[in-house]
Amino acid sequence: MSPLQRKTHVLAVSALAAAVLVTGCSEIQQVSDGVDKAQQCLKAAAVVTDTVQKITKLTDDPAAMEKALNDGAAKLGDVADKAANTTLKEAADGVAKNLRDLNVTDADSAVDATQKLATDSVRWVKQLTDACG
Image (cartoon, rainbow, N blue to C red; front, side, top):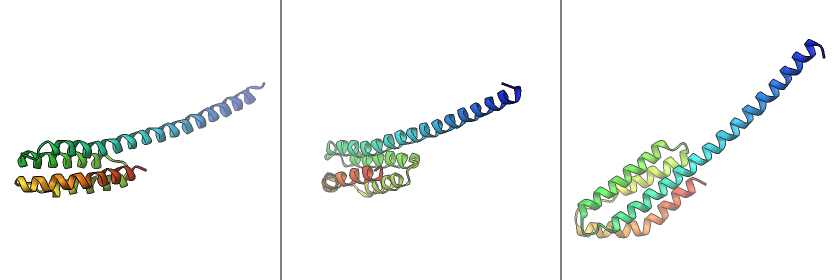
């Protein structure tokens, strides 16, 4: 093999290796993006279910319930801010707004908020998980 042929062969092999490496990195990035998206989706749904669990224990403490609602809304807002998926961001922002809109000032509004969460939280979790689909 002449030096020119050897050089051409080495360049061809190097080009092929670079192409395989770039393609592989792209696929790894896609898998990584998919894992990140799944984690964000799970976290968003977990925030809603955790908030509902906290709320059901606070029906006798309207101030603590209001704080728990606002904390849940803030956590969902954080998930939305970090979401690379626009659909998940919009869904998380919407659910966070719904949590913030529940105004608990006394025992009656605490009961109302608990009932609303009981009915709406399933729909909210579905909205979040559908946004990830």
